[in-house]
Length: 233
Image (cartoon, rainbow, N blue to C red; front, side):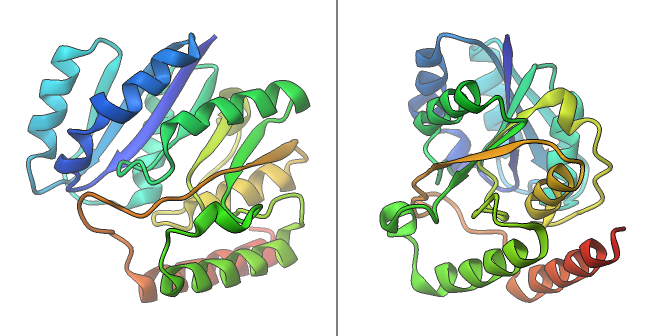
């Protein structure tokens, strides 16, 4: 079994420099063959240089670059296309979902046989306790809307932190360019009759860099995606 970890990043030089401290030890502890695919989505800082250095020091780290910023959805789709693993984990560059939690995703998959296992900060009160309420409230409302539209098999439609069966993921026709990509993937899995499961996951606050989320733009994109889901497009 080969596990691919896909990490989109834009202007994340500070976060990438912490991979050796947080990400790589957690992956080594799994005892699985793994690769890390970092998608540099048009960064304007030193992200490309930091990635080049890291890849030179650690076999199994691949860097794929966009010549301009294309958005989280495009970066994830690029990473998925480059992944060679049987299973794919998607992770934020800032490690706000600590990679030590990947083990719980894998264990839940073995228990359930699911095609998608989501890490949900909504399953326990402490799941998003570190996150400011001005971010928690909109996220909770949007995820509640997706549960109405797509079903209550999942509580977490928008967080990135998930494990995917690669063969199942590659069957989907994904179109999203922004942060709504995660909700689109979950909706497509459910619409296709694929099995899903969840585990509690802790979402920490960002400690490096700045969030790339543009709230008005992403709310509009979620509204468009919801309309597409209703129209089954």
